[in-house]
Length: 150
Image (cartoon, rainbow, N blue to C red):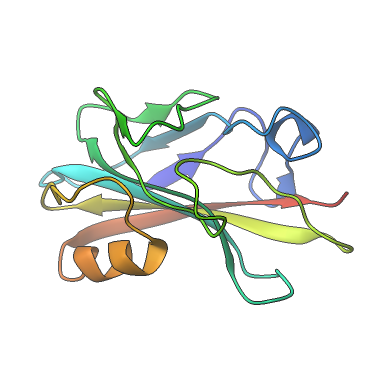
């Protein structure tokens, strides 16, 4: 499975539009190669370079197998009709909060998971809760890493 974006290359710089310095909207993402038995997708975006430990920017899950992309500016609503459910990021908010690093260049990992089930949890799971719920259900995973410096 592979994940990519039309707005930045793997290991490339993320445009300010998708950060706290711009519109703070989620970037467009596309994926291919999901295993045949995939029933849903989950995505986690985090920054392992944050000063206080990994900072989670986005958690979204229960995305149906019928989709293979997310357009830019995905809604921050708890439940997004036809698209899935937003979890809570490290700020305690639903949906995407873009890069806003203090100091040096940080790396942002967009990790996509293909699951053999629909999780059917309420919206609002944290990264740790989602990882626990996905245990034993991950068929494949892929990641895209972008960088940003203010």
